[in-house]
Amino acid sequence: MDWIGRVGNLRQWAQNGARAPHKPLLMLYALGRFQRQPQRPMRYSEIEHDLSELLQDYGPTHRTSPSYPFHHLVSDGVWEVRTDGGDGSPGSGVRVLRESGAQGQLAAGLRGALSADPALLGQLAHLLLDRHFPPSLHPDIAAAVGLDLEPADGTRVAAGPVPGRRRAAELRRQVLIAYEYRCAFCGFDGSLGRVPVGLEAAHVQWWAFRGPDDLANCLCLCSLHHKLFDRGVLGLDSGRRITVSREFVGQSRAAREQVLGLTGRALIGPQQGSARVSPVHITWHSAQVFRGEPRVPECV
Ligand SMILES: [Zn+2]
Image 1: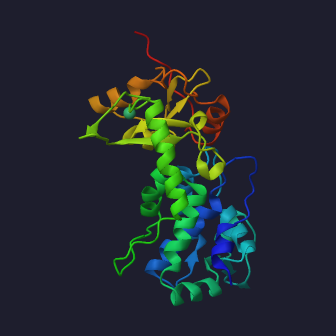
Image 2: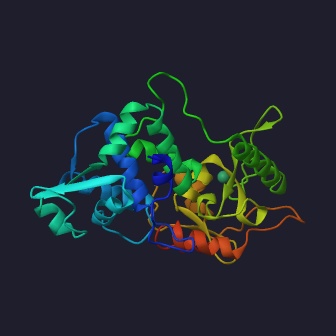
């Protein structure tokens, strides 16, 4: 059985660049549980709260029920559900899943393959993370689902094909030059000797969602602002001014200066002659990543 093919091609509901990471998040959660308790099924009522939080933290901005992936993932052949009454999922309703005692776990064949090949779990987890989330969020999501991506024997799981890494390095070089080695949000420009440090090329429309590798879809951001941009704390409006989510709160001077104070500011860069971020990609980010409503700039 080609488990990498199956897990890599989970059927999604959403089309046209919309994010629907419900099934991938359930799969990652199930892989995390498999690491700790390989053969123990998970009761829907027992994991409903965890799944809700995962969807809320890493899913699209509109609320979705954890019951949907719990039921629908069965049709992808990687997950099985049974109830107190026997095999098969009783449906995608919250109540029926709770009241029937529905329990889910990775499909028996997949559990067998994971037990037989210790490298497979890491490969599947990286595949799901790469296909559905930007790299800056991978460690956070792995921690949230309880996945340990460092194998027990100490060898690192391969981090993707070499051509992909070369592509990322070249893109980073172009983006850092266009923005003159400064964060487009705060102007941070640190270097260690001659090497820029804490500066990253950030995709506006995520690469996993057909966001292109070019300057019209990238910003040079410091590590903090990259993370906050990918988590939807920070965004851009149609005039390329910085937006800050009303859902973000922080009382410290650092939070005020480094996040809240950015509200309504113009981007720094890129230098003349470099492509600016395209409105198409800003629109995608606003709809798919940005959290809730933007704050209103304070009057000075
Ligand atoms: Zn910054």
